[in-house]
Image (cartoon, rainbow, N blue to C red; front, side):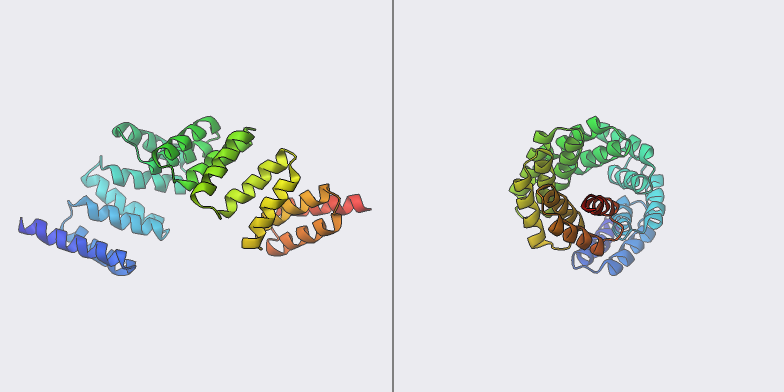
Length: 260
């Protein structure tokens, strides 16, 4: 009983320190907990989670290996291990573990469902990626990243109506979400509703004037409407911001060729 109270005190100190933003001190507490109470897997999980957030992937992996040697079926540690596989590009290993975890629980978390969707997308299975991203938003109707994934994949599949609904849903949660407004502009453009697309993109640039992809899209739309001069300025500006924007380079080159 005394040992349990001592561990609890040490673990709670780590969590309170972490809440105050002092991750370095929290790591020290958690390492101490792992040394003194090696069978309390909770400390390993929190330590690995901190390392992952800091992108210290190898350190997180090492901690999880220690934890899973103690408790091979620990849900949280296996979830973090799958995240590491995904981060390292071992997508099939990640997906195998995610699907195993899905079977382990009657109520899979939105994060698990979203990560399954992400893994399926990486493997090129849009249908399953859309299905799982939709499951994630059903579990958590405020899950913006899941709506973004679903909307983008639906658009790539040609389902503009479904994609539009996903991005509109984001705006009902976060009215000034720049990506949702940008993507709505892309959808309106594909529907040949250029004036509505331009309104969306101009709204994005009013908030985020250095969004190079929005500048590019707006430039292309204005060129289609006959304003080649302004289109060229916007495309040049996009390339000033991001010289690696290959599509902007191609668009600008095509515009210049048509002028001659």
